[in-house]
Length: 85
Image (cartoon, rainbow, N blue to C red; front, side, top):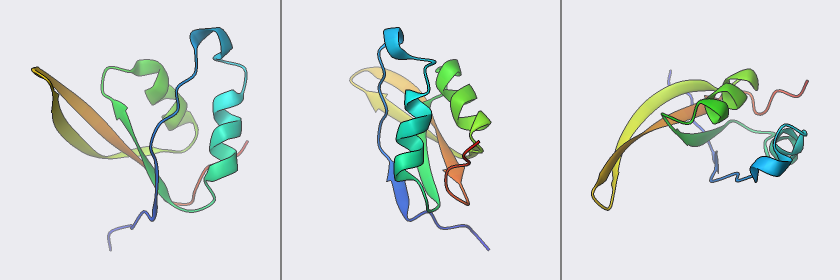
């Protein structure tokens, strides 16, 4: 049976000056009590580590084109919502 994800995290953008201070975790904890998905660029290693460490798993890949540039997005899914901890 395929998991359904009723919610989607659209974006989190934090300036480098405030990264690694728990703000991303606090934002995620405030919004994610149900299964949800989030997209991340395949080349965004810090975001991928953050999502993986929080219990997210890659459930799909999605090629996109922005202007003339081809990109690949990874769809992360949290089956049980955000894992606090």
